[in-house]
Picture (cartoon, one colour):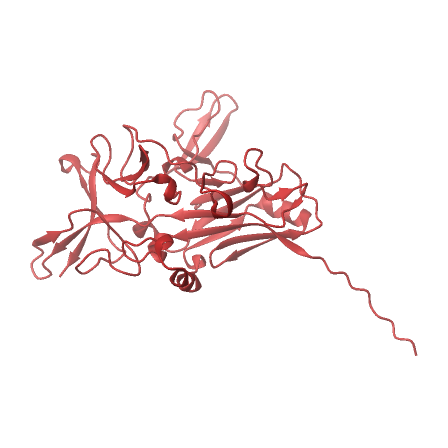
Length: 342
């Protein structure tokens, strides 16, 4: 008796791109950056690290439709996001895939720098087209069309944050700026803000998420009241969005940032990075019995899950406080600090 063998078809998949989201609160060791740790220590930290405990990454409805059309798949991983596609599937040069970032860990806003910014939702009426537009301020867009690299050749790193800007008179507390060649972070708000140097060479430092990652909003003619920076809220983007990842198939300026070559996924797909900087604060020590001040750190020290940036008890990732000019809660922030009772 003849045996009929069923035909099978195997489709090979290839990574289209990967996004690694590294948060320095979880990966740094006290004052030592993750990047400066020994390779075996970095690998061990990454084995224990899981960004899925902190945030979720989901394709927009439009991106889900496009991926289904291309038979592409997206998976959130312990370090970020991977998108795969059949290796023989043609990819349009104008393809853009977008993903919404939503925060799961409530403590994220305490241990992450740049989270003192307002993220209000605005509803603005446009008389020109008789329509209400909705915006959310200070929402970053991480894109391979605007990201800034560091290094060259095999050591080149592809960050999705824009290049960090020079200091301005309108900068707020925790803003990142480049002054000369150095990377600085403001310890208060302008005017007269203090700064701390993060690296004497900005080009030798990761491109952390910063204030200019939120795009300038261009509103319709006649519309008033929109925030300066942020994004428009649509059916594609939920109200609780923290950030958006936007990846284009082709970067016409820097081919290293492209996901395809000749209309197909590259054999060596790009690995993009998003870096979140941990918060630095003045550590203020109080007597646990009467609340009287004992001492405080001479400079802001970083909060980290592992290690201790100071020589005394380190703070938790909890309550953050601010000193305002003239003790006016509406005044500019002079410094941010955390209290430790001992």
